[in-house]
Length: 358
Picture 1 (spheres, rainbow, N blue to C red):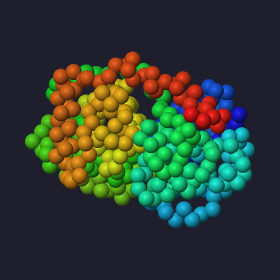
Picture 2 (picture 1 turned 120 degrees about the vertical axis):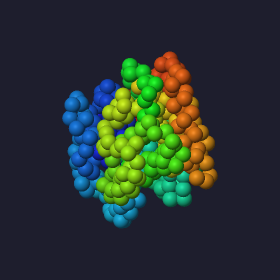
Picture 3 (picture 1 turned 90 degrees about the vertical axis):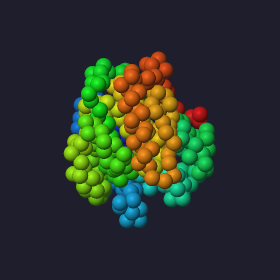
Picture 4 (picture 1 turned 30 degrees about the horizontal axis):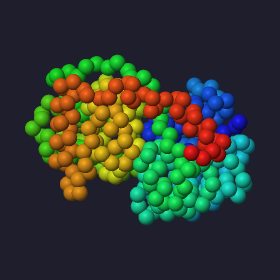
């Protein structure tokens, strides 16, 4: 079967990283996959070396983003890859405008949801584009599945599909003299980079030998968030911004613990999961999909405060470094890997493509 995946970005983070895993799983199931994205980027470079997967840049692809709200008023047309495909995957709600077109053309499809937009606008998006459809839906976490259910998507249409996780990678042991906190993710003002910086500067200023390493890059239209971050970075020589990375792998050896303190609940906790793979302890807010992952991998989860978060973040980071120094207490391979196996993903995708209910 020819499968087309419509995706709104071409980076190496979150949903893009999981997309590549799922595309590979589809190939193992006997399908060929065409990925359509709106711009060039790291995902395209990764796909170049994959058998059975190709990637096309279609700059006319309509992607719903707050930074480009005017695009919501455009009329989408299906890319040639989707028109010629036997099956289409709408990858994230950012491509939701294509759902009515697929319905009109009676194309078989499913929607892969990697968002947790617990707001009136987010709920409206789900109710308008998903709740009345009969197509299968995959959710990246139980938290997302619950959110979809609250907004009218029948529970038997939704299958929770975690990403595939490779076996743990041996890493250097924590250097007793090293205290490097890593923050990695898209630079968009919501992933917690600035929040961790502020906690580091206001409550950990006495830790002269501690370092904060920031990684990530902005989407087009989000460059202002990077400028805001760089202004904070320039004020403290203990903080280093390393720019765009393809994944946590790029900084794994350089950090001792990973801080995950986004400004709103995340749909999934991919960074804590990848940190576990490299033997690094993750600490973050215990809400959204990240809560599931922190519990699974043995990370440290703290409640999200209602007021100023700096003191809470600083205290959590100190606690995480202390735990790491005393012997990282993350969960074993036997407890984690079965939940993120290729077989689990392949079975779920086979159900979604067949339109089976869960």
